[in-house]
Length: 233
Image (cartoon, rainbow, N blue to C red; front, side, top):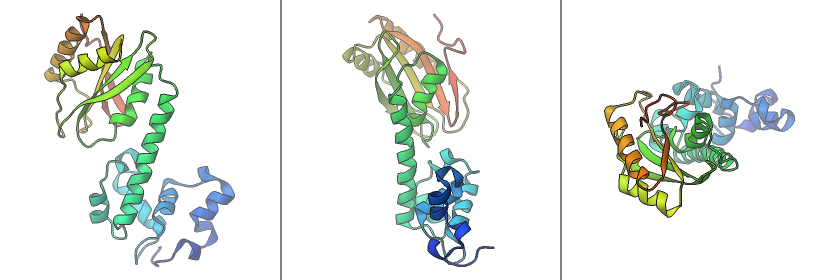
């Protein structure tokens, strides 16, 4: 059992994540070891690796769930995590999210529900509250731009139909994808979801702009209105 407050340099060589990274490559490290490199040291009673394992265990070893933790939650929940270490973890999670988004921007053709989900996931999947976004596409279904339209609480958000239409017209969009997230993990479509989708579809149709899909995202899962035949004619 790890009980001493040793620095990384004082650990046995096989237990040193930095040396392991240098000698064997980054892929040889576990999530806990990578996290330990970020935080540098543990507490009086456990090493950085042990502390990292405990942090990851609290989120079922799910990095997406780790990305949802706030600075305050990290500090209050884990002895050995102060403000500086919490900020480091949050910054690393945000860099990972931005890297994923940057990768998506290199291939912005959204001609399938899976590609659309991969594009939207960095924007919506990790949020603890609901947000409503639109993605504007050209006639080749390539991304022109994306915008956050509304933000709400844990269970609901709102979408301004006029704002969506204006953004689409300003960007000369040919088609639009709607998306919002369900932090609860429930992908069930509500009557409100169906209603706002139809309102937006009818408004866009007046300007010969097509609503091609509406996504509900939660973590690594999604529901596509188009796939489920919920857009109606």
